[in-house]
Length: 305
Image (cartoon, rainbow, N blue to C red; front, side, top):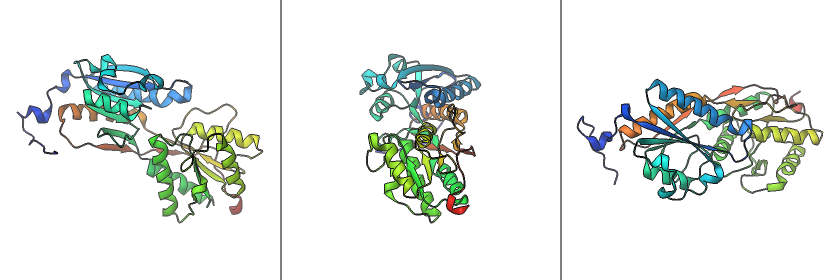
């Protein structure tokens, strides 16, 4: 019912029954089924940050690897990987594209902290990215270069980061008095599937010469399609992304947002220890700001030359 016990030295229910000095922490890494250097880059940086943070705090860290197809099968606490249910595991840091039902199942067994993905139907602590500020920085840069018609595109609107960045995009347009047109938000209101690139090219022909992509891989695919259509980046069209992923061969370096993923993972470890020690504490979110990486894919709007 929301009542909280007063914090006292003898309140074991308030503090939790596990001492942080004896805790074994779990890290669930959900790897993509189709692995590429870019698809695993974010997770490997989280692994590095969590490992270093656990070592600095003299904590044992059990890393449980799974795949996106395997984690789809978790729908109840009984289906959570056995190692994560072991009594020695005091809590779990969850990273990767894990369905809400699987996160909920894990959270029923152990204290849980989520990395980067916001599961709106589950009350779990979150360490993530400040997408609003990041998109604002991209829109500000594009406006400085004379762009007034800016589009947004993503390939999977079910991912919370894609929607979070979209909401930041709309807010930034409003703050800068720039026009918003839902037809220039590709794959948000309507699933376009095979028409993804053709819808964007149609928008470019309608004057939308700057695009913010939900992450760098989408941006690089879009740049490749623009090349096939005879459109030059950034001379004809500007493209931005997120996550500062590996440069694709033959492509210009993406104008993007880099996240302090190692620091974020370390904070995830700290937040998990706090949750283990204080099960009744309010659910919290900690958002980290990103850094704008200028790249080579953003240019001055033609009308501003």
